[in-house]
Figure 1: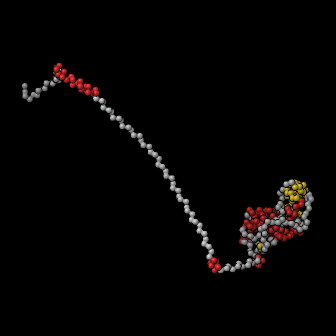
Figure 2 (figure 1 turned 135 degrees about the horizontal axis):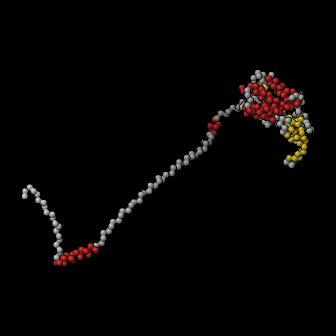
Figure 3 (figure 1 turned 120 degrees about the vertical axis):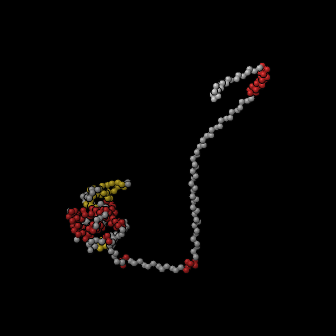
Length: 305
C-alpha cells in the first residue's frame, strides 16, 4: 500500500453509560431527594410588574389675559378766580358812552341787491318795506258789509267767492248765523260768522275807481321788498298776501312779474306769483267788467312798458 494514500478514519461509536451499581445508587439517592425537596420549598421568583403606560398630557388652551383698564383721568380742581383788586379797579379808565344812533330818516335809501335790480332803469326800491309783524286783515273804510244770497264777496285767504247760503250752525255748543261762501277759483266752501265779518277780513268787491288805483300800484317803478336773504323776503311777501289788501297783493304780483323778465323764477317765487294772481285777477276783472284774459293781457302790457 502506497504511503501517500490517506487512511479513512473509522466511525466513532457513542459510549454507553455504564449502569450504576447498587452501592452508588444508594449513595446518591439521599442527595437527589434533598435537591428535589429544596427546589419544591423554594418560592418561585416574583414577576416584575409591567411598566404602566403614561397617559398623554392634555394641552390646555392659553388663558387670555384681561385688558388692563386705563385709569380714569383725574380732574384738576377748579381754582376760584382771585378777588378783584380794588386799586386796579379804581385805576381803570371809564369807557366813553356810545354815540347816539343816526335816525333812519337821515340815512339815504340803500340800493337794491344785485339779484333784485330789474332791467328797467326807472325801477327803484321802496322806502317803506313791510313790517315782519303778523299781518292785520285789510279793513276797507265804512261800516261792515251785509251780504245776501247771490252777492259776491272777497275772502282774504281765498279770493273772490259767492254767498250761496246763510245758515244757523252750532260749534262748541254756541249757535251763530254763518255766511256759506263758495270760492270761484276752486269751488271750496268757507263759512264766516255774520257777526265777525270785520275780524275775518271778509269784504265787498272793490269798485272801478279802486281797481284803477290797484293798477296804478302795478305801474309804479319800485321794488316793494328789499331784504336779505331770500328767506326774509319770502316771509315779507307772504305776509303781504295774507293781509288781504288788494294793494299789497298787487305789489307782490308786480315784483314777481318783473323778476320773471330778468331770470327764471324759483319754486317759491312761482308760488307767490300764482297766489297773487288767483287772489287779484278775478276781482279786478269783475270790477272793470272785463274777462280774465283781457285783464291779464293788460297786466302784461303794464309790466312790458
